[in-house]
Image (tube, rainbow, N blue to C red; front, side, top):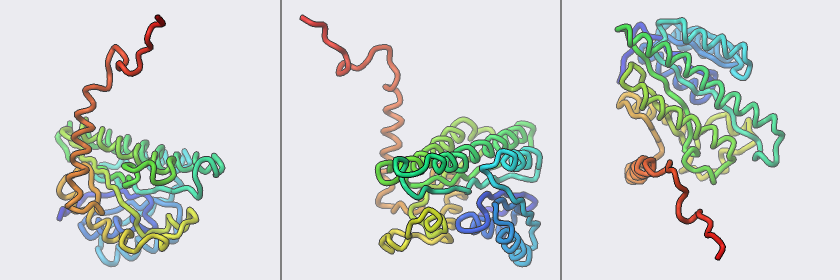
Length: 275
């Protein structure tokens, strides 16, 4: 287990669910915390409990990450606070219906929270961590909450799964480009996890078979085990027996990359000249 004394973690979506569990686990690992969410009462209650239990410095930073001014304020904290060495990009939302059957403003809000906000925050944190490492200081880490639906776009609403595929792509790209420059990036892909996101999007988590639903505590503990192992992609519900399928998919994807850009179109797309 990683101990992090005199380091600060900033956790978004920290008032409940996965974010609140991350806050708990990180404080008990020795991190000071900056807790970000809209629900001030819940943040304050969580902060008070964690201060009592861990004696860590816990700051509440209320923010609506779909609001540009609030988002900029959180990004400025990441860029300017040298004590922050870990960003947990957890805040997110789902949709009540699919794109065709919902108001497009719902999709716009999802993209703002699930795509724009983590991109802005990862940029601010990543720049700061890489610059510090280049100067001989301590770099940092970013944990991005994706989803197993990033790997199964046919299985759910495409706006939500697409946002999570974006997070996975972003994480893998940053890891490849900056992994040797003081920045560790982990994408965590939960399956169905018991959090309030289901009720907020009008869905019943209990409609799933019980064997498919993971508790948030178990999800975060598994994800942090992957963090300690310095995994780039951590899929807590993926059984060991199925891991080879994911690894094979990754290998095939990388093998395919060499054939994705050529001067001439493939033979099957060439139009025959009329006789």
